[in-house]
Structures are given as structure tokens and as C-alpha cells.
Length: 355
Ligand SMILES: Cc1cc2nc3c(=O)[nH]c(=O)nc-3n(C[C@H](O)[C@H](O)[C@H](O)COP(=O)(O)OP(=O)(O)OC[C@H]3O[C@@H](n4cnc5c(N)ncnc54)[C@H](O)[C@@H]3O)c2cc1C
Ligand code: FES
View 1 (cartoon, rainbow, N blue to C red):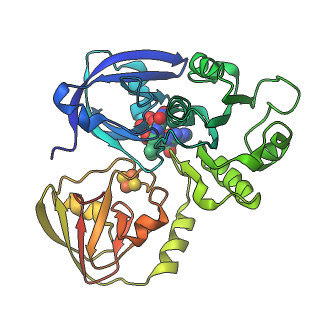
View 2 (view 1 turned 180 degrees about the vertical axis):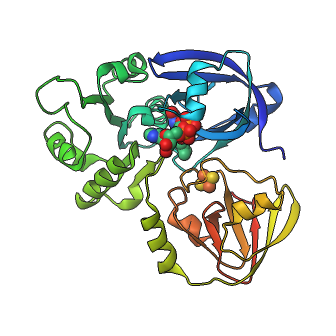
């Protein structure tokens, strides 16, 4: 299937002691395919120790930077992030899937908005792209950013951010959890209490949109705080890189939505090809499709990215978890194949028609 393109690694830069950024050489014929909107991610694929490893990485370059670059922070014992930091070299070829994702920002030069960007650790990657896009393309808008790290050494893109902060439309606040700075405001983790503390330094009442990327707990606490402060839920956007959702939570969601347990005849449409199979054991559509040799797209298999997005064109499915699709998309019949289990005797799922 033509989901992946073989792209040459053009440049690798060491950003911090455990993070590298990687840019790709995009051949002329693929340029339009790799045009991206700030906030989107790429899925990278590599066979590591005989395993087909696919991981998503948010694009950290701005849409007008003239390059497609991602940054990979090394996770302890992490398969792909260790490979990217320790072994990957310029000139090597990786399989790459074109930009995807819902955590996006599309600029409009006529807007005059106050955007609040909150991130921690590698969560800066989509957020710096969004910040650049706002500052470059919306001359009347301003940006406030809270960026959490353990210490200043861990700050990814520090010099780039400091440079952006020379604009009087960009208010940048680093927050350190293991380094003392000012005895309070800029120390600790980004929590609901920290937002409360920042009321003295930031005018939250003028915020129009919030973009959050970082640990699940931070996203959860801070979104709840903003909702309690009266910011419309629809204006609070977030991107999760990983989830610790326990089986217990998944099972509650599963049992609360449906008790369908019968046999389902499933057809998946991939690259125009129709593949038919039967699900009898409650498997999700992605796993069952793969077992039936369908070359279907996926990355996280955890309901976090949306690489496995499908349109359910016939029948019903239920998802165990969904951290990637907007409620409107679910209403329109979109689902995540890695989380979708048949809820009707016949299901037709289209991997091609996902926009
Ligand atoms: C939409 C999206 C965008 C992403 N963008 C970026 C990005 O820009 N930069 C980036 O560095 N990562 C990003 N990620 C995370 C990335 O896809 C990988 O999950 C991460 O690099 C770990 O992969 P690995 O193969 O090294 O670790 P694995 O071998 O998959 O995991 C090793 C261990 O680490 C745990 N783990 C996995 N991810 C994390 C994490 N993020 N934090 C803490 N523990 C973790 C796993 O549960 C496992 O126990 C993104 C994820 C998604 C879904
Ligand atoms: S593969 Fe990431 S949501 Fe399904």
C-alpha cells in the first residue's frame, strides 16, 4: 500500500542531551503531499530488531520554514526514540507517512486573538509550529506560552523560543520542576493550581483558544481548570502523545456502551480494495483486518493518534477509547479502527475516505 514514502533524512540536530530533530528531503513530486498545517504529525516506520515499529512525531517546523522537521525525545527503553537518538544518521532512508492529525492551527491574517499554548517536555513540538504560524501569519494576534520542563537544560528549542519571545506579541514562561528560579511562579509542574497562580501574570480572561500538549494528567487538570474558568470546551484543543488509561477505564467504557457480542461480517476498504472477513471474538477492526492480510494504516494502536481513522459507511461500531477524534467526527461516522469493535451484524469500514 502506498501509505508510506521512502524519505531520506536530510539533517539531524541535537536539541538537548536526549532529543534530536530530524528533517527530511522531500522530492519535488511529493512536495504537495508533505505540505502541512501547524500541529500535524508524521508517522515514521522502521524495522528494529525484526519488529515493524511505527511511531508518530509532531512536525516542529513552521509551515513557512521550508522544511519538514520532527523532534524525537528519547524515552527510557523506548524502541524508536532510542534508535532515532543513538543510531539514525543523515542520508539514511525512513518510511514516512504524510502529515495527519486533528491538533491543527490554520491561520487567518484578519484575526485578532489571544492564543494560550501550554506544553511540557516533547509536547513543545506541535506547539512551537503553532506559535510560529500565529506570529508569522496573524499580525494582530498574540501568544502566551507556558512550557514545563525539569530544568533549563531539558528545554527543547530554547534558543528558537527565546528568539520568538523578542516579539512583544509573544509572552513566554518557562516552568521548572527541578530547578529553582524565582521562588514560586516559575517553579513546579503545570497544574490547575499553577494556572491559578498565573492569574497575576497572565490575562486569562482575554484568551480565545487554548492548545495543550504534554502528559495526560496535565492536559486533564488544566483543561478542567479552564472549563471551570468559563472557557468553552470547544476552544480547548489537546494532543496526547501517550496514555496511561488503565484496562479498568477501557472496560467501563466498553461495557457502558453496548453488549453486542455476536458475529459480524466486516468489509474494509483499503486503497480501493475490498477485504471481507468475519469477527466472532470481539476483536477490533484493525487487528482483524491485519489478521486477514489487509495492509491497513496504524501507529500507536492506543486510540491516541488518528493514523487508523476509518469512515463507517455501514453498520455500527463502538470504540474502547478515543483520544484523537473530535465529537463531531464521531457523529459523522468516523472511528479509530484500533479501538472500534463491531456492534452490528454487518460493518463496512472505509480507510480511504477519511477527510
Ligand atoms: C500524535 C502523536 C505525536 C507525537 N509526537 C511526538 C513528538 O513530537 N516527539 C516525541 O518525542 N514523541 C512524540 N510522540 C510519542 C511517540 O510517538 C512515541 O510514543 C515515543 O517516541 C516513544 O516511542 P518508543 O518507540 O521510543 O517507545 P516504546 O518502545 O513505544 O515505549 C517504551 C516505554 O515507554 C513508554 N512511553 C511511550 N511513550 C512515552 C512518552 N511519550 N512518555 C513517557 N513514556 C512513554 C511506553 O509505555 C513503554 O513502557 C507522539 C505521539 C503521538 C500519538
Ligand atoms: S493507531 Fe493510533 S489511534 Fe489507532
